[in-house]
Length: 200
Image 1: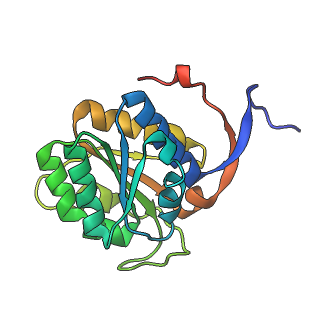
Image 2 (image 1 turned 60 degrees about the vertical axis):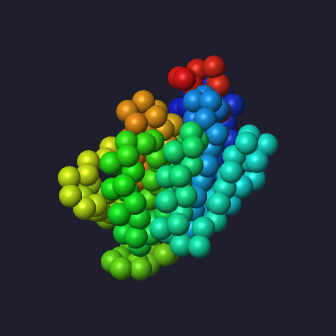
């Protein structure tokens, strides 16, 4: 039988695309200029590629020399009043730990995106796991709580990262956003949201 879907305009979308569009929508609705500080890493690199195509929305993307420079540039952008984002995967998240603690101490909004992949240490770029939850909960020094939001499907990345931004901006805290290689590179029909229906 045909799939039961509510009427509307749909397009096929991949998880990292939906995530990028969710960040753009959140930037527009919050009135904050979007800044992405990132170091390329599979399977998160597509977000940097996608956002760099939308400079017409005032988006600034920065390919840093390493993961630490990526997150600290985002912290600086947040200080300057931007909606700041950094993207990575497990190995990069490990390197960002100290700066995440700094962002929590500073009480600044920051979105830390972890597109999870498999294995310990540098991991397996083409193997997907959802095994970084303990790292997301506790992968920082000292008492360093941080909200965590995760996506369940490729199209859910849009609304889930939009909610992560809302929490971050409203409560002045970094938020960890979790996805994984299958969600990032998988595709499904996505119903176009109506801009007026998106909360400020």
